[in-house]
Length: 229
Image (tube, rainbow, N blue to C red; front, top):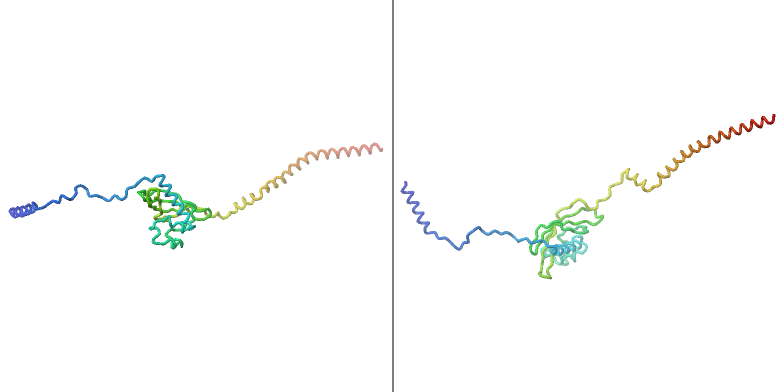
């Protein structure tokens, strides 16, 4: 039994001596794909991106001038549509009555590619809330001719706010409105009530005078009767 095990081990050992190691394989850990390298989102990039976003919102999102927004988008966003097809307003961007757009957060900033979270503010009296969107822009060209284009514009939600209609007037509100429309009503009522103390004061003064005159008249009549006897 022991001899058989030794023969098997010897056989495998001899085969191992015939193995060849491929030294062309690099040593160390396997390389991993780390993805694109992030770069700072500079003030200059922010200004350029914000300018394009505002123009895109003012033309495409509001549907005010869809044709003009064609040159602000990449072929990816065009989805194969020609300029004339794009101008028909059947674009892959949800319409919204936007007054302006603000960059809320930078999701990722790479060379020639930025991903942002933005907030769209509604126009006055539009009766809609604030809207959030995730936007991606890509830079095309180089040097002085480089420009940013909108590559995707996806609505992500609606926030409370906007311009809700005024609530219906309540009884107290109507009463307040009535008082506001007649500011002198209370003044007229107070003036009438002021006559009462004036009348009481007049009685206090006139009663003694009247009693005095009545006594003087009675004495006068009595003196005349005595003088005539």
